[in-house]
Length: 481
Image (cartoon, rainbow, N blue to C red; front, side, top):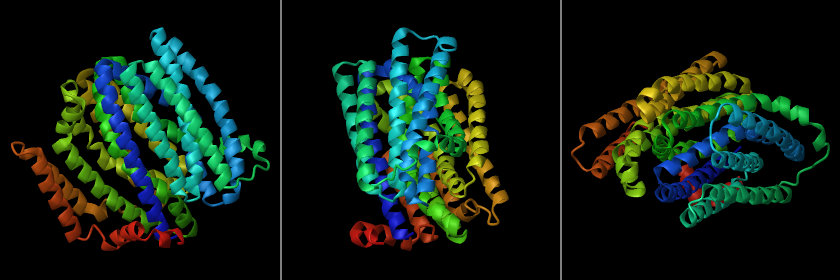
């Protein structure tokens, strides 16, 4: 697989992630200002709860599709029909569990119940879009996936803002999102049928195969979603809607940066799968290159958030969300581990070691729940932020030792990137000392020093930049690669 093709898809998917998150950020600003802290907290709680139960229908099928279809393009029809049938069965199970949870454990009014049920169906069709987009990713057709995701971002964010401004009704807001996801999912199926020419022969006969093949992904995805969303749910149950609203704004801002590595990971997973199949040398070379740049981006983003985060929260969200800036300055340190954990997940996946992901993600999720139970009652939203940082750190440590155990070549990301880590920490320390100087000046000076030394000590490779520029300036060569 051409490195130029990987670069092309990485660039497309990263820019799509950025574009999508910009629209989501603008939508969050409008929703937070129009709805207010408490009402926005209700919305964040409903959506986090819906994702937790809706993830049963996710079942990790997108990862299974990318890995298997990238190796054998003939199985598109079988995977498309068979997995969709399985997802519908899983939706019925999810609804049953959801009803039991609401009736037995959650004491809420009829209005919140209506929001929660609308939310879980919305999460179901959102997961279906992720599932259908995975086929284009496996075919290395990032441009088609980009079209789908851009449409989703524009319509979901745009309609949400209009409804919030005109009515302020959370039910109408969620219902509109549900309708949009349904229509764009139908569009994605049409595009699969047109551009991938799926063969539907025997597609209905392999439901058990998909359940058997997908369960390791499903369990790991469950634990991933659990430690991503459980803090919002637990914070709401322990500290109420206002604390949830303040915390959710910080998380929403961080999400813009959290999904930068997702675009890169989605692009390199097919290449990692092929390299692992052919041999380990290219597999580890690509992994180490991605890790290096993910670390550089992580420290750059952290510098941005701790110097300018509070100011930007005040400008965009207003004085009512001032505390969210403090939460953001703390929780942003999650990115150091999170970026590496994205890569580790795909390395395990490409190596057909998805069952080990269960150990990895279960450890992080259980640790996160325990830390939330300990820290939230005493420290509220700051406790939830600390629990998230510690949980990502635990996952990273476990992943590191797993790689040393499973591979003849140990995962040398840390040892080969001392310079990035030391310089990043130094720049962050400087940012915290010079508080009397303009935040913008501090960020410009620190980020300039950071980037200069990355070039100076060779952590930013001119060859990699050339690949990026060749894509930007001469796309035809890459398309033919």
